[in-house]
Length: 320
Image (cartoon, rainbow, N blue to C red):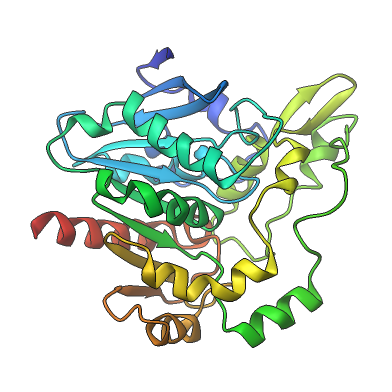
């Protein structure tokens, strides 16, 4: 494991020069001391950040599709006040290495390898996974075989709709999978590339600086200009198939281990009806917490409410 320790992150490197007015809480969070490093997993170097005291119970944070660990970089410091927190980039995303193939088994192995290498399994209390969107899919996959290693998983706005709504969604939207992956486009300059950054699904962001931050760290310098950090090959993974989405309610309910759901009540991927549907699928013992006014990208439009919901679940679980 290659590790780089950063006592206090440089705010000028964290926030792009064109950032809209950043609130003080965001600046403070981004300057909380953290460790940065890489963990070897299946031949790829997996990038991670770590906050907090390793003597505290652990939390493992996992991001959504085409995103990166920095979507938790302003959330983790609030959790690190009482917990040992690790967030990592899935291979082929963020600052982790690309692979030839991105199977569910590979993703599950990354979860265990990162947790083990960063010491989350060294504590007497098993670490809790907090996973947003696609990260929730990975977490559920990992929990099928690895649930005994973890204290539970908090699934944050993973797409879950009734079968008829899933079918309507796939009829209206482009599938995630396609033919042979095409190389990512090269843009001549940062401003042009930044102008192409969008959230999927689209939504307003109540803190504009967070949108600027996510866009900035989703891009990298490339020969001829700027391009996206994610590997185009990730579209060939096992996530996003209609057949899997049709069974997801039952899969979540039947997955072993402790589970909770946090979602945005205005999300188009998981809403109040989704919570009802999950209970109908057998998930009557799964607490579901809806954040009023929040959409799919919880950490971008209601970051403080999101932190509060996560704290509540973790505190309750660890008190039991």
